[in-house]
Amino acid sequence: MNVTTADKRAAFRKLHESGCFILPNPVDVGSAKALQHLGFKAVASSSAGFAWTIGKADNHVNVDDVCQHLAALSSAIDLPVNADFEGGFAVEPDKVADHVERCVRTGVAGLSIEDSTGDKNKPLYDGALAVERIRASRKAIGDSGALLVGRCEAYLWGVTDLKLVIDRLTAYADAGADCLYAPGLKTREDIAAVVKAVAPKPFNLLIGASGLSLKEAEDLGVRRISVGGSLARAAWGGFMRAAKEMAEKGTFTELGNGYPGGELNKMFS
Image (cartoon, rainbow, N blue to C red; front, side, top):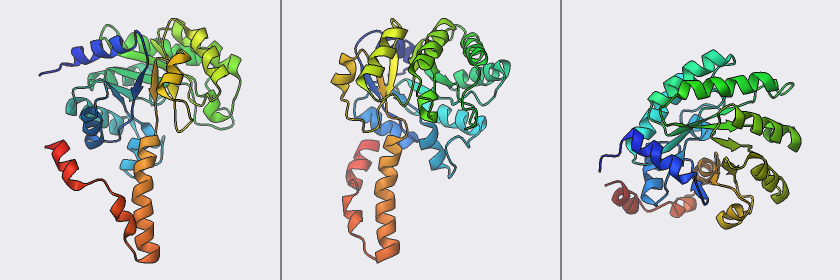
């Protein structure tokens, strides 16, 4: 079956209409193919997960790195790919728009734009500028069919002000975001409040071993769940445990916990 970019974008939008789905985060072509093999309906890139694969820290990759990565993911699988496009790799709305246009050309089905500055002394862009960045991104996406996710990063930076988060997400929705996302929310009450505030637009919940199940998140009104860098950290966990054992003890028992090579070859054949 020859699945086109338009097909993927239409399927991705359909997924956001009802229910709740898991949007796992691969780090490379191999892990993306594995997730497709396991039956997931869509995937999302991870800024941290990808950065670690090329030996860089999160938020230290550039737009060239990311667009090359997104193009590779999008061409390798038949599933829609949602891009973690960080802050658009620029401050000014017009430059963010230029980069968003480039991101859309990679074949992604959606992309997110966040409002964090990277400066812990002033972690979020001023509200008006943050909204203009979303509005410019929406215009850049145009009629391509790609979905725009507006992200408020407040909780990840220690700004645990739920009213601020809700005010920003509703403003991003008004500026053209199709889906809203506030990573770092933990309590059921906060999640439910944000879901209600942005409705009828869908809300993305970040889960990283938080204890909520797919069913519990769906009951709160969440439309999609992503796991950020958690799958990458899980993979690195196995790698580092085995490597540390060899380096520190000269033993190899952790290698016995690896996934069978024959199963991997079968999956990729």
